[in-house]
Each structure stands twice: as structure tokens, then as C-alpha cells.
Image (cartoon, rainbow, N blue to C red):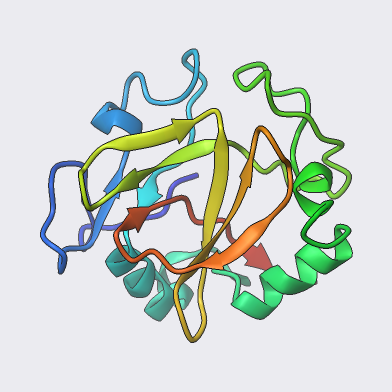
Length: 168
């Protein structure tokens, strides 16, 4: 399920101050790999807006993970060299290059990204990324070639998915 409201514009080209979310290739009907759709890609301004309004936008108890939440997940899933493999789903038909056990039912998907610097979309089927919040807005990344987790990375011009977490 995608989360956005009338305060986040979907698609188009944006200035650096606008809150935007994008369908991959700006096409709601065809984004994704072989017709299997992925969630929206959010810019940092949308991320900040959603983080500031979590209690009114997301279902009860759900929130954007902190950098600490993501670090705990990565450590529990085997550290940066093994977490990508253990968090990725190996049976995604639309991403045959990805392998993994999905041991933690996280189903990290290679949903690609949009770079604000050029407005182009990149890496669908090759990289899985998601925002976390904290002192810096970061995203975590795993690639089809090496299912390890890099990050945190700070790239304020990128638009990537948001994965919500819920406390147990």
C-alpha cells in the first residue's frame, strides 16, 4: 500500500523544495518489472513530511524506521555482508538475478530509484533501497550482484521507497 496525501504531488518534475512521489518511469500503469508493480519512490521532502505526520497518515503503530531500527535489522540478519541475502526474496519472478533466503520475511525488492539531479529512473531489478529517518535522511541499498547492505547513504536528490516498521 502506498501512503501519500494531497500534500505530496505524484509524478512530474519538481523543484528541490517540493514534496513528490514517483511511479517508476512516471507511469502508473506500467511501472515495475514485467507488469509486477512496486511502491512509490519518495523524495526527501516527502519523507520528512511523512515522518512529521506519521500518527495521522500511517496505520496505528506503524512508522518510518530510524537509522537505529535499520542497524538492528541488519545486525540481526547477519551484518552488512549477509543481510541483503537474508532479507531479499529469491523467488521474485521479475528480478531473476536476485537470490536470497528471505529468512526474515522482509522481502527486500529491487525497486530502483529516481535521481533528482537528472530526473531519470535507474536500477529497477538491480537495487533495493529504502529510506530511514534520523539525524540524516538515509537509504539502505542491496544490489543483484552482491546482496550485501551498504549505507547509510545520504543522497538528498534520490527518490526511493519507504518501508514502514511496527514495534512488536
